[in-house]
Image 1 (cartoon, rainbow, N blue to C red):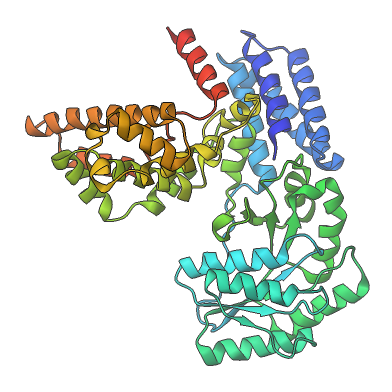
Image 2: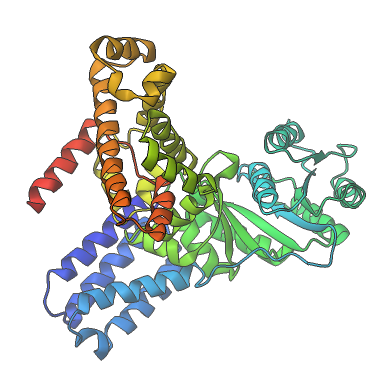
Amino acid sequence: MFNSLQDRLQDTFDRLKGKGRLTEDDINVAMREIRLALLEADVNFRVVKRFVAACKERCLAADVLDSLTPAQNVVRVVLEELTQLLGSTESALTLAPNRHPNSIMLVGLQGSGKTTAAAKLAYLLKKQGQKPLLAACDVYRPAAIDQLETLGSEVGVPVYTGDRTDPVAIAKGAIAAAADEGASVVIIDTAGRLQIDEVMMAEAVAIKNAVKPDQVLMVVDAMAGQDIVNVVSEFAEKTDFDGVIMSKLDGDARGGGALSVREVTGKPIKFVSTGEKPDALEVFHPDRMAKRILGMGDVVGIIERAEELADAEAMADAERMLNEGFTMDDMLKQVNTIRKMGGLGKILAMLPGGERLMGQLPDGIDEGVVGRMEAMIFSMTPQERARPKIINGMRRARIAKGSGRSVQEVNQLIRQWDEMNAMMGKLRAMQNNGQLSPRAMKQMAAQMKNQGAPAGGNRAQRRMQARKGRKRR
């Protein structure tokens, strides 16, 4: 998502940065390129017109044109206006503290991902200490209730189905059941249609009037483009929803819907779904999304992901590795940490320029490298994992055969372990000399949870890294 838009915008900014001083003509050309980039990304044309007009007015101001770094100021202006377009500030999910249970109602078209979003939201709230209950009010779509029960079982959240015939009665029954069972929040999955119709709207309004939900969230398919503008406008008028869950943001659509919905409806985007797994629902941060669209990355997001995975074991692991050495089991922990953070592609996409780099790789990111490392480590004996230096030629051949990999790949894994073990040796020497403070120990413990991507990847990645190294030299 947004890759094409990101490339066009970055090309425009690169041309501006090549100029020592900007003129009004330079700004006009840049604004024309930004307008075309947004229209090609399928952003609503009215939204594009207002956005470009606001950017142009600010960029033509004297404090931009007469500054020492006018190109950087243009980027700053576009970033601020794009953040404003996406919502300016984070819009948190609002629940009534003195009401038990709270209720959240999901609405939207069929195929937008409501049922999956309901389960993901339940998983997110459960992680936050809530006790959610799912209500299956889609009685029309074949197997919709069965799907929600399967997803509820996967995330460990109960599903209320009622009589499976009357959506309003099911919603009311779910509220009563939640009160009896001590659930703190009910998530109501309503029915959708392939297009807006009066029956669907009337049913949604009836459920809302019956249960009076604390929040009504509309699930919007990010791949729908600017066509979604009419849909969200109709839902906003009839159901007066409080916010948006943007689904399928990991797709390959141009992303115009995501950039249009906030401006058209005035309703904030509260969550974005970036994958199929239960933990793929994230709180939406307009400023971070704007930076990612402009190729500035989301380093804060990476830090937050690492902090979520950090635990009390990190400090103990760091101390043990300093005293006993770095083992293959330690490397395996890092491999699993990368997997928990969403994989190599997700981490790279959050780095400045990462999405553009992935687009330049002919074979993309080789996510399989994590699984291959794991297979090779699992093919080692406990003694080999604890003392990798004993792995001779015969052992390497056995490990390669057992994991289905080549001896060269096993050699590469051991070389990577050897480099990290050498780093541990240097840190151990610093500790023995009193040069490693407790604060540095804590920082290292945090880094152990976010050591970075494993070496290797595909050949295109290695060639690109080598070229960058030669350029720096």
